[in-house]
Image (cartoon, rainbow, N blue to C red; front, side):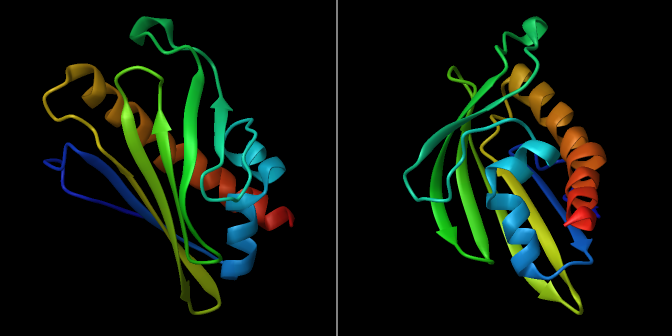
Length: 148
């Protein structure tokens, strides 16, 4: 798994090889029930313009109520999913998943962009979420894929 240099304070950029074909990885990204298993409970539908939420544990110390407000911005089956990602307050980010066939599997790229480099709270969020994407969510999607 690779990450950009530490001085890219505006984004989290990760990638991981998954030993599954793009169609299967796409299903894990766009099926609401599967998304719940590896990311968070949600009311996602794979339709451009659809507004939905993810729900997780509130983080009162940083003023986060546990609801992530999202909208599907772009969708290219088995290739690209881009959503808006907001805490309903100051965070106005985008999350993009790109899938590229690689050998017998898929390289999954994640770009979580739009962090304000001058906002201490957003930089704290970037560090926390970067660790979460890297250490838990990428592992969890691989585990879900292994069960399909």
